[in-house]
Amino acid sequence: MNLLKITEYLKSNVIGTVLATDELAYQLEDGKLEGVYSDQVTFSNLFYSESGLHFDMFVVAKETIYELDDKLERGSINRDYSGVSVFRYELAKRSSSGEVTGVLRLISTTVKNHTAEAIVYGVYDIALENNELRWREQQLLYRDQSSDNDNSRAVAFDSRNRFYHEDGKLRFEYNGSCFDVDTVTLAKTPSKDVFPQFLAKEK
Image 1: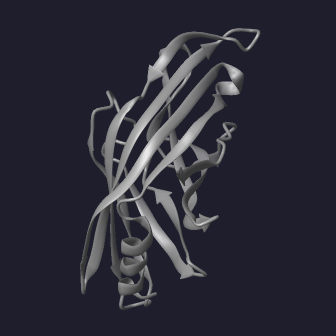
Image 2: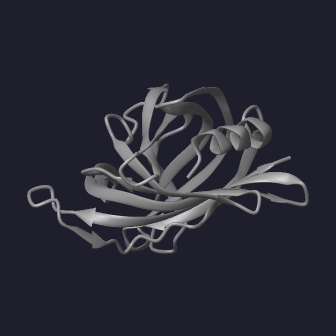
C-alpha cells in the first residue's frame, strides 16, 4: 500500500468536504431503549511525511437515547451524547509487511461522559482502488454503552468503513458490529444490539 497515494486521495476527495448523516434510529437492550442519531462530519488537518500521515475527523453530532415503554413509545431521556468531537486518524507504513496500519482516537470533545474517551481503535486492511478507500477498525479493550435503569455495560465495536462516490458526491460509510465484553477476561461475544449502517453524504 502506497502512503503517498492515500494522502493524495484524501487531499483530492475528502479533506474539507462537508458530509451529513440523516437522522436514524436504533434500539438497544431488547427494545428497552431507542437511540436517535444525526451528524455533520468534516475532515481536516491532513499532514504527510515519509514515515506516516494523520488527519482529523470533526463531528457535530446529535444523539439522544430514550427509555421506551411497553408500547415502544419514547419516554424519558436515558443519555444525551450531543456535542462536538474531534477524532484523529494516524497511519504509517510497516516495512515488515508493506501494509499501512494505524490508530483512531478521540482527541477533543464537548460531549459529557463521551463513551470514546481514552479508547483506541486499530486501523488496518486498508485498500485504495476504483476511486474508493476502504479500511477496517478494531476497538481495543472495551467502552461503556447505555443500558436500562441508567446503567452501563461493557462493549466493543469493530467496523468496516469506506470513502466512495455516488453521483459525483462523496460518501463516508460506517458498518459497525457490537460485542459484549467480559471485563475480567476481555473475551468478546456478539451483542444482541444491532446497529444500522451510518452513511454520511456530501450535499
